[in-house]
Image 1 (cartoon, rainbow, N blue to C red):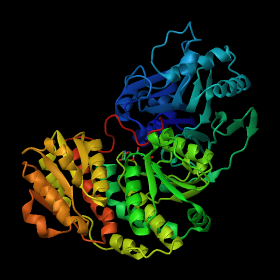
Image 2 (cartoon, rainbow, N blue to C red):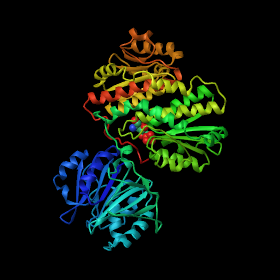
Image 3 (cartoon, helix red, strand yellow):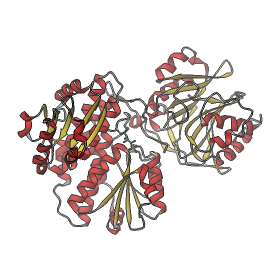
Length: 596
Ligand code: AGP
């Protein structure tokens, strides 16, 4: 996923676009660039690395232009280098494009552009040249809109384009298909952005462009077209503070967002209690099969849900990675409830899976943190989590909110099937309201110091603790670059135990009372091969039998994922920090993977 932004108005455009890019950096940060007019000439400045490096290259030339477009990249086509960074200019420098998405059929276009010497490996540079050729030196608004419409219709894939023409200093053209693009409107300026968080504080209205929309903005208006005709889109009042993301005094967003985890649970449950779920409950009751689909951390939340629902309500759940789901030709039909979990609501594999299930006639429910995301357009049923904007790539508070929404779903199933289950909504609310969540921070910091230089690390658990071990392993590996692997405790002796020696650290989770003896046996197995076991558990009987012990609060077994999440998230964050890494923007990753 990449971030695109554009400004045209009375203010200096370059500082506006740079500030906007900094808020979009979480969408991709291997390179960035900006196009603006300098002494009447269209100029492009690019840089590998963070936006700060781009800013250094531009100063003090930023006082030059009332119009600019900017891009921060997560590489899909071509290396993360300056040549492939956006914006991309056509060969004769008439057309300048920034793009979020993938043009799947770009090579067929490229093969027709035989007289162009491409400087990059990107699909975007191909598009810039395609448009330039189609315009044929006629840069009138009418001709640009006509060709933009015709050309984008030939594209297979996804795009959010912002386009500057060297001959036009007051208009920015746009086109949108599958990738998010919103319009921000204020007094004497207009903006285009990938999401609301990057709009400037003076924005008064916001328009959510639809797939197939194209048009232009200038400082006083936005003209939107669809299939050759001008169209109107609903304007929403824009609340800057609600979308404004700040670190609230923390050094990193990840630290702040871990602290917000409990509030995210409470806000999500409060919101869910206020909505009418009767229609959804009817679909749940009429469904014979339940599917759960997502990616990464979202699917770990799904695994917890599957385990709890199966145990508490005796309902079978079929769970799969979104990237695998539709290729297995699952037996889905009108009798199926398909639950798609996605914080961003823009993850390409999850969107494709939802579209696939919907086409099969399934009842589709989205659990997402972004109300305006594409998954809410595909799924007729939506349970919105209330984690607020999550900036750090590693999902923490959003994961907690996903758990809250999924446990709420278990409660609805229990009501529908009249099942007596081991927990109530009140139990979850009290668990979150009571107890200081910083209780283990110092001890986790010591462990982070201890393991930060390890090459690999094991996470081991049984039952719910196994799924949480998977989440703990993902968190640590994605921000600290230490190879981590999660194992079901009972599986170790079937092969993986061979990896254990006296240098091996193993983080063991033991929160399920009925599994104490079994897990204790696994710990002994590993320790007898030299493993250094770090046990995270509310049960103190093993405290003196392991290398390190982290005591956590005890709650009902089925609710322990809410408790054990935080120490795992803190361990990942502190380990990354100890290693001098930026936990908010881990290498090679982006906040939402909008390519399959
Ligand atoms: C979470 O820590 C990861 N960054 C990643 O696995 C993420 O959960 C996954 O990409 C799914 O994202 P989504 O929830 O926005 O669909």
